[in-house]
Each structure stands twice: as structure tokens, then as C-alpha cells.
Length: 129
Image 1 (tube, rainbow, N blue to C red):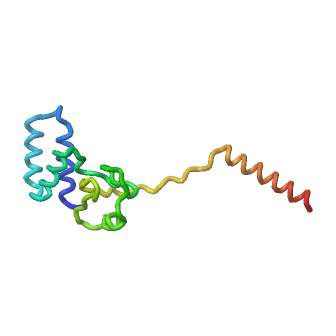
Image 2 (cartoon, helix red, strand yellow):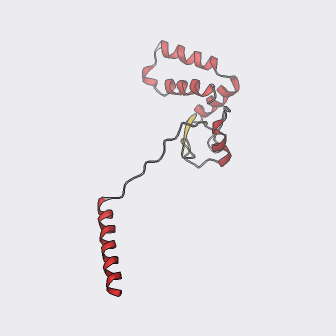
Image 3 (tube, rainbow, N blue to C red):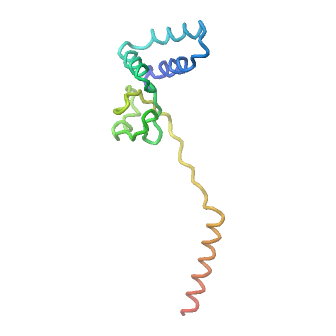
């Protein structure tokens, strides 16, 4: 993950809580803005002004900002340390480790139905022979 992303995430979190404006939070936001590279911060500010979510998580290949499927090369490049931007909404992309999909056991009724069908098939085969 690029070193700018955690800074921008913290800055976004501070700016999204306008009710808790304290001198400490304003100072921390100023420190974060000073630590971020100028071009990255300029793009971040453009997104904020245009009311676009500046940081978006990618889940199952879909941008969390605009909810559109990303190009395959962007998903493959997630392992690199480069800074990636959504081609549609312009948000900086964060690639959290995806959890494996849970295997859902078949419903109880479905198992019973399958067992009954097996019995019916066995009976049908026995009567034919």
C-alpha cells in the first residue's frame, strides 16, 4: 500500500466529523496535509470540493466510491506499491485483503428433498428392472 493512503484516510476521517472540530483535530489535519505530496493533496482537494468520496475501498473488484467494476489491470496491480485512482470517479483506491467467501451449507429442507428424490429414484429403478 502506498504511504500516502493512510495519511489521506486519517484526513478524510477527521474532515468527515465536522461536529468534533477541536484545535487538536485541526492541528492534526494540518500536519497530515503537510505530510502528503502536493499533487496527491491537490487531487484529494478536488475530489472533496466536487463532493466525491476521496478514498474508496475495492471489494470484489468494485470501487466503493462509484460502485462500478474496475478494469482487470487495476485489480492485478493492487499488489504493487503504486497509488491507484478509479477511472470513473477519480477516488484513490484502497485494496484491503479480501476475505474468502463463506461456503453456505444447503438448507435443511433442501437436504431432505434431495434424500427423498434419491429414495424415489431408487424405487423407480427397482420397479423398472
